[in-house]
Amino acid sequence: MGAQRALLVTRRLTDAVQARAQRDYDAVLNDADRVFTSEELVERCQDVDAVLPCHSERFTAEVIAALPDRLKVIANHSVGVDHVDLDAAREKGIIVTNTPDVLSDATAEIAILCMLGAARRGAEGNRMIREGKWDFWSPAFMVGRQVTGKRFGILGMGRVGQVTAERARGFGMEVHYHNRRRLPPEAERGAVYHERFEDLLRNSDVLSLHCPASTATRNAINAETLALLPEGAILVNTARGDLVDEDALIAALQSGRLFAAGLDVFRTEPGGNPALAALENVFLLPHIGSATQETRDAMGFRALDNLDAVFAGREPRDRVA
Ligand code: DGY
Image (cartoon, rainbow, N blue to C red; front, side, top):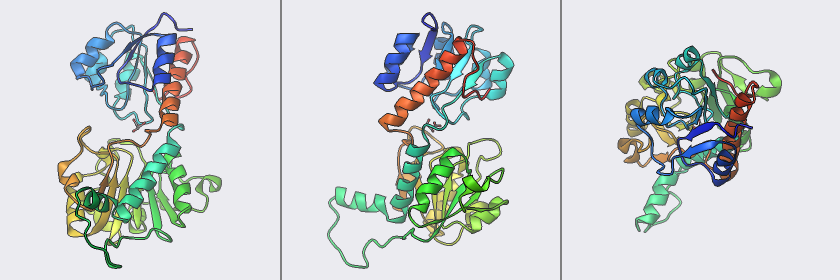
């Protein structure tokens, strides 16, 4: 099956996934493990039937227009597909797939880590010890926010949002959410639905972002929306940096309007935002929501399953365009 197909793998994947890709495809691996420029991406796609990229490769309309006719599939190793111009792919007849479901648990774990790291001043305490500056202790020292019994607001109640809600319930939190559509009661599991995003903001002691980045959600968190959160709220973002106006977030963190933020994603990746990193009340991680062995294997296998389906003439399970 598919043995003669040429496949470009843009990033270093787990050993098991790379081994399967090499077994079943004429796979070109990126062992240099750096992000290709648009020109390099186009150039390397010229002699392949499919590409298996991550969220880091941007398939803009220009890049897609320059892809060869033989390239039939973009099988993403990611659930997010904001890096691919889906309309341009449809127009060119390229199938696009993603890897939903398999990363929900891992990403929910990171959201909870970000919440607790922010609420309990994890970055500040960690830095203090590492820099040899822990020279004092008292009951008034390093006092943070307890999340037990607080309201956990979710923007985007898809698969990751629903698993994160479940984990938050484990901390005795009351779940609130805003979503394009209200969920059925069995999926809602007692969560309070807010038809208007503004109402979710007013009811979130912790606000956790789980919606895709799109023209509709870009900068959803900005000076106006941050001002609607309760005084001393916490923002958690494990979805996409584009959802947040980082200058507005910095202002809210500096003024104390927000108690803290826990962030796994940034406008600029890799690298993040040095102005955010300079703040003690920000707990930061380098986009590792799905970075566990189990999940990265499962994502890679799911991407390969989608490719196999296309080349076997079947509809891929996770087609998004
Ligand atoms: C995703 O799957 O979209 C994650 O952000 C990792 O790429």
